[in-house]
Each structure stands twice: as structure tokens, then as C-alpha cells.
Image (cartoon, rainbow, N blue to C red; front, side, top):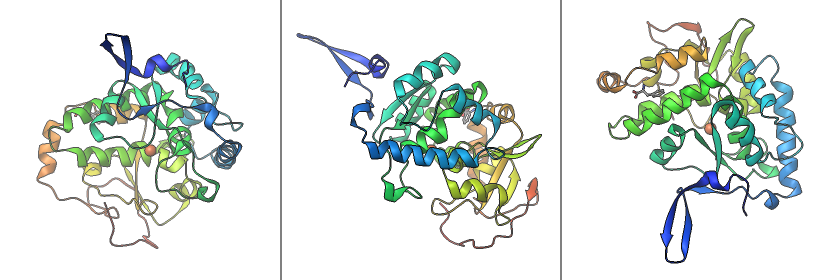
Amino acid sequence: MKTPDDALQRISYLKTDRGEIPVYASGIVEQDESAYTKTDHQVWQQLYQRQRALLPGRACDEFLNGLEALNLGPDRIPSFAETNVLLHRQTGWRLVAVNGLLPDLRFFELLASKQFPVTWWIRKPAEIDYISEPDLFHDFFGHVPLLANPVFGDYLQAYGAGGVKAAGLDALAYLARLYWYTVEFGLIQTKAGLRIYGAGILSSKGESVYSLDSKAPNRIGFELQRLMQTRYRIDSYQQSYFVINSFQQLFEATAPDFTPVYQQLADRPTLAARAITDSDLVLQRGTGEGFAELGDV
Ligand code: PHE
Ligand code: FE
């Protein structure tokens, strides 16, 4: 199916004797809006309404403003093409539809060129509460609203460029931790209180409550090298959350060249997801209740 943003997804042309054939970036497909069933739209609606009701007083203002600025509502699965018109006007970002996860380098290259990959399919009703793979609800509802924020958008673009560079430096584990503890599971301190900006939290009903209200996890002030040493959980809620004071802080802390940072980190041990160190800016020392000892990634 041709959508209005078809041209945006075409990254080059191949010249043949029969004219030009569009060549698509690896892993990038088109969102076929006509392929969604009534059930698909209902799943979106149910998840959207449930999450949206939880977010006042929990999600940061930048996220809520993004939902509104991009006109994202519960009625139906959003059209990537329609969202792209608004998003591109605001921050220069565009969404591209994908079948699922991409190879690291491909992912970094897309981010570096302000293209965010969004899985086009949505989970089944039986998977409403939990799905191990990122689907459209996680990718779209969780990640896209913040792309409308210029500072966060610049951070994510810089992250992509940094990833392309790190791929040659054997430093991908450090960048994976940074992504995990900021883009996916980040918290932000605001005048009104602690708020969520991480997409992994904002697309999860349980963790949207747990990350702010539970006494079990640690909440630690953001410090780049400390965070990059910290392993994480992929099978449960996080045992530690890192808290930024502003997106500007995040952008500035990650702006310097990481090459010397990677060299220093190579001589340091990794830290357990549940660890607290003497130099941490501890906002809350978690009780650790219910934590599994093993299983950090
Ligand atoms: N400044 C980092 C580097 O030089 C790039 C980067 C920016 C990485 C933002 C992550 C986040 O490698
Ligand atoms: Fe994600």
C-alpha cells in the first residue's frame, strides 16, 4: 500500500533499464492501515484509556504535552503518516514502520537521522497486560509523545550518532544501559514531584504505579558513569531507577565525547541492578522487597 509518506521511507533508487525502482531501508515496511482489525483498534483503545487515566500526576508534562500536540487519542490506532506531519513540523523527527527489532547499527543510524522505528502490529487481547516483545502500543504510546519535545529529541538523535561510533569501540553494553535507564525507565524530578518519562514504564500499567510508589526499588540521582556500570532487569520491574532533574541535564551530561569514558569504564566492575554505592546520590534507598538476586542482564 502506498501511504503519503511512502517517499520518506524510500532511502534510495536503483536505476534499471526499466526505470527507477525504490529501495527501502532494511527492516522498514509500510503501515498498512487497512490491515488492522476491529479487535486491533479495540486493543489500542483499551490500553490507551487505561494508561491515560493513570498518567496525570505520574507522567511528566513533556510527555502529556506530546500526546496532545500529536493529537494522539484512544479512538483508533494512529496513522503514522498523519502523526508524521505534526511531528516533523515540531522537531524534525519521523516515524518509520518496522516489523520488530532492528540490528543495533541499523537502529542507531535511524535515530541519528531522526527516524524512530515503530512496530506496526499490536498485541492480541490475551496479551493486554504483558507482552515480552515491543509492539505498537509500547513503541507508539510509550516513545512517540516525547519525540515532540525538542530537547529530548536532540538527546535521542545524539544517542543514535553515539551508537554508530560506539559500534566500532566495543562499547555497546554501556550505551544499552544508558538507553534502558533513561529512554525506557527514566524518572524526572519536577517542582510538582517525581514524574515518569521512560517509555517502558509509561506503556506499563503496573510499573507506572510501582516506579513512583513502591518502597522496594532504589531511586538514584542520574550520574553518567555510575549508570553505565549498572546491569538491569528484563524480566521484572526495575530494582533501581535513575532520576534526572531536566532533559537539559541529560542532554548536557551526554554531550561530551564518550571515548575516554568508555576507556575508564573498561577498568571498572559492573554493578548489580540493586546496588547502592557510597558516592550515589540516593533519593530513596529501596527495601529490596521481593527482589530476585540473580538474573541481571
Ligand atoms: N556524546 C556521546 C559520544 O561521543 C554520544 C551520545 C550522546 C551518546 C547522547 C549517548 C547519548 O559518544
Ligand atoms: Fe522501547
